[in-house]
Picture 1 (tube, rainbow, N blue to C red):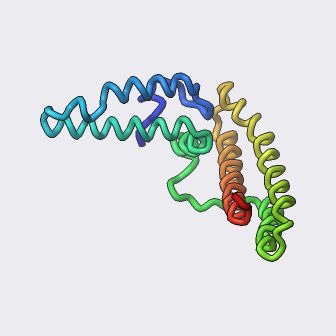
Picture 2 (cartoon, one colour; picture 1 turned 90 degrees about the horizontal axis):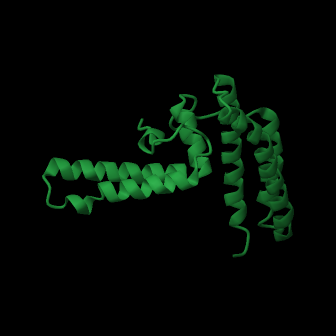
Length: 173
C-alpha cells in the first residue's frame, strides 16, 4: 500500500493540513505531469504516468475526511479492503427504526423532514463521539484500542450515509 503521507512529506493523521496537501499536490503535479515526458523513453513515460496517478489518488484521499479515515485505518492495518463489519446490535436497532421511516416516505412524503432530522441528529452524535478519539490519535495515542473505536465509528457513518442517500431519492431537488 502506497503511503500518501510519505509522498506528501507529512505525518500520518486523520486531519491532514489541507494547505499542505494542496501545495504538495500542485508541486508533484507539475513535477510528474505526463506531458513533460511526452518525448521521453517508454519507461520514463510510464513512471511519470504512475506517479501522476498516485498523486491524484493521494490528493482525492487526503482532502476528503471520510476517505482519509478509511485510508488511515487501512494504513494502520485495522481496516481491510472490502471488509464486512458487524455493527453493534443497539446501533442496528436504532437504524432499523430510521430505515422504517425512510421506507414509509414513498407512501407519506411528509415523513421526509422527520427522517432527515433524525438522520442529522445521528450524524451530529457520530461527530461528537468520534472527535475525542481523533484528538487522542492526534496527541499520539496510536494504540489498537483507539483505532478499533475509530473503525467502529467509520462503519457507523458509512451506514448513516447510505440511509442519507436513500432519503435523498425522496427529497425534491
